[in-house]
Length: 347
Image (tube, rainbow, N blue to C red; front, side):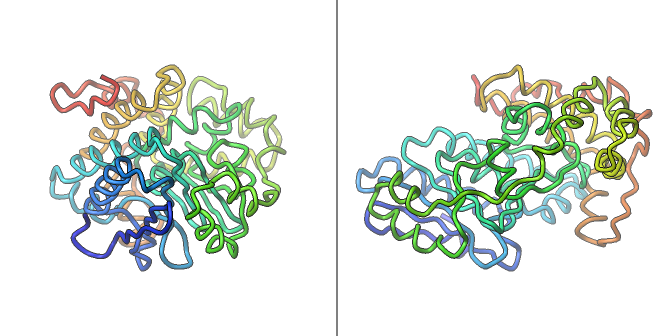
């Protein structure tokens, strides 16, 4: 279990309840929290008295803002290996959630980003609200979508997933349903009532009684230019298409992408395309582990976290600074096998 109260566990009726409990840090995941989730799920999987698991976040701001990127920043700066150990356990947790044999209900209320997507969107019953803001924002910090994010986004309709992977933009409830990141919309004010109802073990009835139509999303209206522009073979060509297509939203999207790490953009596009052909979540997580390990020793991750989170000047100095300077060999190096260090989930 966690060495502190960062993960709260309780049971009631047929339900096991998990509360991520670091509200001041927007419930960002630490390694101890990941270990606590593993332990809880392993115990409840074997416990015949538990028929459903429910995960939510403490506080009013959201389920989880992701991994503890300040800790990753410090680890990368010191050339440590703590982040590698964290990712190894985190990605195994993502796979465990996806294969959990009982209903796993995730309350994706408020902010759900990065690692928060990993502990929710792989679940079997994913609930969003009118307050949900869901994103894989890694390219903004010089990183690449992980926690199975490339698997989820690669399966989204058309090129919508590529759009979100490269921009890191957040979406609301309606778009989360369209993308396949969520299953049901429930008003945030009814989540406590739903949590109580789930204790009966009748998940289908409890969710049916609480669900409402989702607020209308934004992405469907932009499918035509998104699908056309992101079908290009390179980030450079995607940007050319976005700029030339004549849509104001497309041009603004190009401007957003140009603020992201050039290396992260090219690796992200490659990872998304590869994820489509890999098939299983486990195979994609193995790939993401290689990519993440490579990114730990690259300069953009430390610089991106510095600019966005530490100093908050929002002016990262990417290295290299231009897409033209990121070679095919640079991209390929992120996917190189790790030998004995492989995650090995798909083996």
